[in-house]
Image (tube, rainbow, N blue to C red; front, side):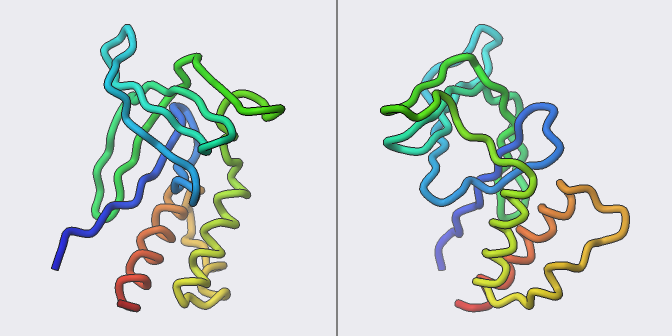
Amino acid sequence: MGIEAREIVIRRCGGSFAFSLPHGNTFEILDSQDKRARLLARIGVPGAAGETVAVAEIVERDGEIEYIVEPAGVSSSVGRQPPGYSWPQVQDEHERLRVRWEAAGGRPTDFLAWRQGASWDSQFAEWRARIREMQRAER
């Protein structure tokens, strides 16, 4: 049995929630640092737009690696696409998690259950963990 890949989760410095890197998006640690000696990374959509970010912190948890990042001022685009990465809004991540939940076999009514006092971030983290559990159980 091999080592399972961990889910890549991104949070902007000061952001209220972390999000799973959407399918087709890339996050690549570069071989360079900013003036504050922080690792630089590139986040984007191949063939579309992206930007370079500084990695302020890396948090490793069971099943996921969270990169806390802040824009480093370098962005790009292809064609008429606006430059830079299209950062998801909370409703975007909520919808992606709902779709993943149902695809993993979770009941829609269970997804709607919200732990009392939970923040967007803590609820999203709980849903990601439960989705990974359901996906492991399918194998």
